[in-house]
Every structure is written in structure tokens, then in C-alpha cells.
Image (cartoon, rainbow, N blue to C red; front, side, top):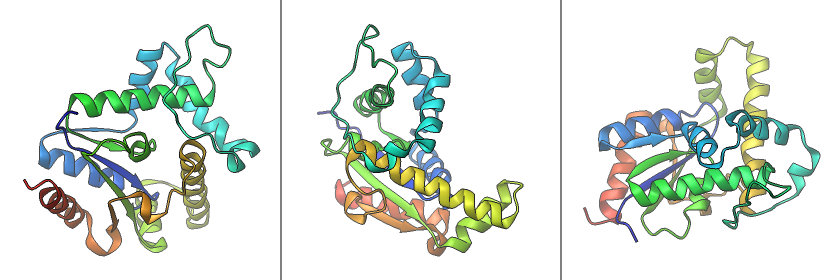
Length: 208
């Protein structure tokens, strides 16, 4: 087993989890991966990167997606398989990239059920970042030109999708604290203190 330490970040929309992940990576001098995983999975599989994005979109509108669960098992289908560009296989290629990255380097990975994909890796620190509705709304409003009502709806929809996506690929509940090592309220702590908190946890847990 490699001695790399990987920090996975799950986050509510507007809580700043992605920003905290990037800040943490910078302070630790390691890479932070989020959307790049789609590009890398596309290169690895030969499946058009657009399909990775479309897979997410397609799932958002699918009724079956909300009730079914097909936990990730690591299988990769070959190009000649009829399900080569299925949602599962597209996810499985992303998971392969996540596992390869964890093997190769210490890094921060944002989203993509990385905590579950790497659940058997003893050197993974899984973090869930959340905040109250007002904090998430205020932050989201700074970055998007929507009315408050539209933004509220968008946040709800995004978090619901993240929950559905997580349940579908893991069989677990996304916002369940038991899935994570650390749950941090960024609204109370602020971003920098969240970074400090994660660093302190790493130090204590790995006797660094």
C-alpha cells in the first residue's frame, strides 16, 4: 500500500468545500483534482469528455436514478460491450482515475464519491463541508447572477442531485456523518480554519 495521504472533499453547494480543498492542497504542496478527473477518465477510456458531463445531466432528469442504487464494484467494461458508455461504466472510469491518483501521489479530490471509491485505503481522510442555508445562499449569490429565489432552488436541486448521485453509486446517504472522518461547518469556522482543522486531524491521525 502506498503511503500517500489522500483527502476527499464532499460538500454542500455554496459551502466552499471546493475552495477549502484547493487552499488545503496549496498549503500542503499537493494537487487538487475535481473536474479534471472527467478529462482524465475521458483520455483513459476513449469516451468523449462531453459524455461524462452529459451523463451527470442525464441522471439529473431520470426518475430511476432517484430510487435505484448500483454501488460501485470496480468493474470496467471494454469498448465492444453494449454498456460501454453507460452511467455505471462512465463512473467506473472516473473511479479508476481516483484510485490511480491515490496510488501515485498525495492529493485532494473533490466530489465524485471519492471517499467511497477509496474506502479500503487506510490513508484516506474523508471530509464533508456544510454550512447553514443563509451562508450557502450568500456565497452562491456572489458568484451567480440569479435572483435569490432562483438561487435557492438551484442550491436545493444541486444538493439533491449530489445526494442521489452518491446513493446511486455507493448505496449510502451522502449527508450521513458516518461516511466521513470529519464534518466541518464552514459557515462557523471560515475557510482558513477549516483548512487548519483538516491539517490538525491529519497530523494527529498519522502521527506526523
